[in-house]
Length: 102
Image (cartoon, rainbow, N blue to C red):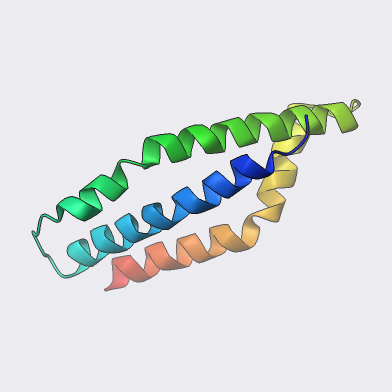
């Protein structure tokens, strides 16, 4: 399966409202604000579409990997992806640790 640029573009565009919603949510949590902002609540509704598109992209990526690496199994694919994501996972754990300390 070939990569679909339109799918990547849509995933990138849907990332923006997801990011804004998360910033709003974490700001409310950090400062104990109990404000209801309908605009940001509606932005949060794109998560279902975003997760579906990420799932489709992941499926297509696995199929492409199976085609090009016939001798390897799916576990090798996920270990390769995890190795590529180590830096991002490190930042996530640093942020979680920072949140616990403050």
